[in-house]
Image 1 (tube, rainbow, N blue to C red):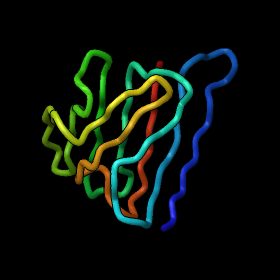
Image 2 (cartoon, one colour):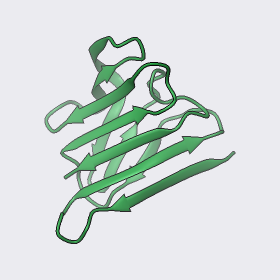
Image 3 (cartoon, helix red, strand yellow):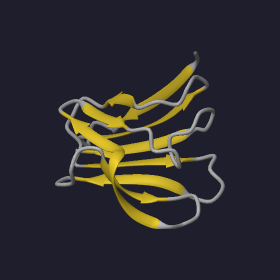
Image 4 (tube, helix red, strand yellow):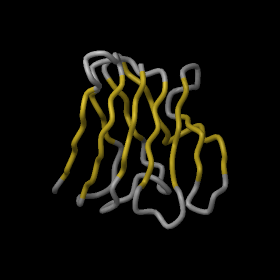
Length: 111
C-alpha cells in the first residue's frame, strides 16, 4: 500500500487554514486528515477526474454529508460517504466520484 499525503499550514498571520493533497495506490477507502483545528468549511476535489468532481462541506451540515459536484457536472446534496469534521480535522468518505484509487485529491479546510 502506498499513500502520498502532503499539506501546508497557513502563514502565521492567517489562522485555521490548511491545504494539502492526497493520493493512494491502495484500495480506495475513507481517510482522515489532521489539520489541528475544527473545520468550518472543507472542499475536496479530484484532480484526475474527467470533468470536475468535488465535495464541499459547510458548518451546520450533517456528518458524512456534502454538496457533490459529480464528474458529469451534476450538483447534488449527499447524506452519506461525504465529509465528517472532527475537533482536529476531518474524514473524507468513500464517495466514488471523488475518492478514487490512483487519483490525486486536493483539499482545503478553513476553521
